[in-house]
Length: 90
Image (cartoon, rainbow, N blue to C red; front, side, top):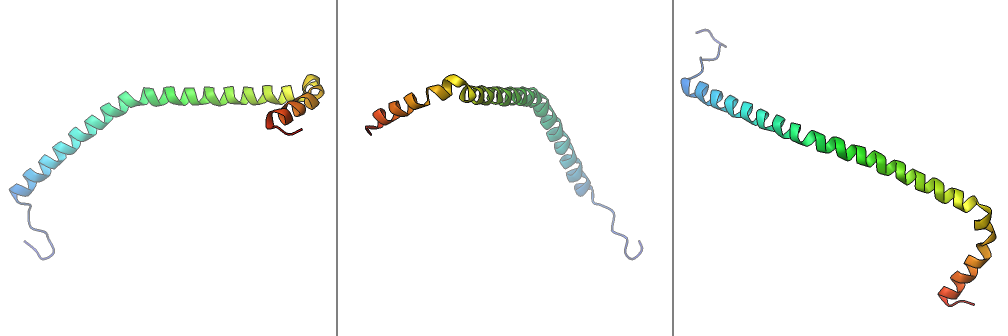
């Protein structure tokens, strides 16, 4: 054995490393299975989120269109009177 060369690993160390490697492989397999089960749920939730955002944007557009309508503008004084009466302010 030359200077600077590490000693050969002991059999116990090799057995420990082999056991740890085996456990790590089992954990990787379990995590991959979990990912495979979870991925469809994530995809579904992402689709639902996109749909909800689109629906929210449609509602915002409808509200904006309503507020720009002539009937909304014409009834503005009536809504103001109703608010004052509801608040008890005359």
